[in-house]
Length: 199
Image (tube, one colour):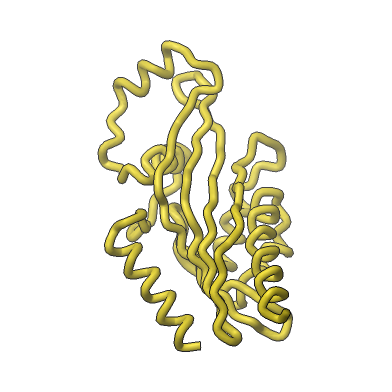
């Protein structure tokens, strides 16, 4: 019964991250990670408290905002430690060549969690990027011309259009972004499993 209770609490915590991040509920977001928790995604790698501050600065009070669709995590437990892998879709909208476009990024979160007196919290999150796409809200010649003339080849395929979007908005991509199937992603998963086993 306790195992089921822990998995439900962890699942709710991971889901709450998406709601709080997208809706600008910063105090609630800050409580999801441990005080010394860290996060590594495309545009940020470092302490979670700094991630919250950076997210707050760029937050749009009105839509269209970025939306995180978070799946059901697969959770492994070992005493006060847990490892969760969760599929996620990152949805956003911006403008290219005068055309509103939607991007969809498919990724998964690799979370190391710890049980503290207040309950479960995330200690470290790494995102592993799998693939993405870019679609015009209303198809037209301007979008097709842009796609035909733009060279995206300097961006890895798993986050090509998300990476372009971030650069387009003035944000730098941090080195070491994990891509699905790459040795670095496999090493991250192995390290997380070793961390869990040592719990």
